[in-house]
Image (tube, rainbow, N blue to C red; front, side):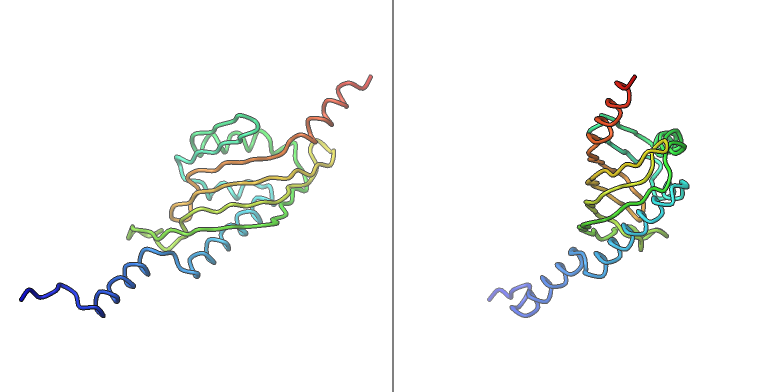
Length: 170
């Protein structure tokens, strides 16, 4: 008689172990949400401190502007070129959805969050002294606490209509 590799109970225990290793935990999701809120808090300071959270080969895509930045250095340059125009920037996060992924690495950053975070909110402040408030959705992919890909969907229509009106004025 052939003996089964697993009996019914050990097969169930093995299956549960595999699922618990592969599935992200509530704790990991909480860590990723905390990371997301912290990132936007740094971004609101508008002093460039949030840039430390990008991987060297990060890609940032602004869908509506048709902008694709393909390295941390390009992201930093674009940010610094725009930063002088903005004041009192604040991000209001209306919804944050996260899906953490376990790290397969044993390096020093393996304990840092990885996964996907999607944020819906509003960014407001002053641009060249004029108030603005824009709705946005951002999709961010992280590996070991660093952004590897980011897609920004910002509704710039209110800025465009205001700029068109001010340029049409005599």
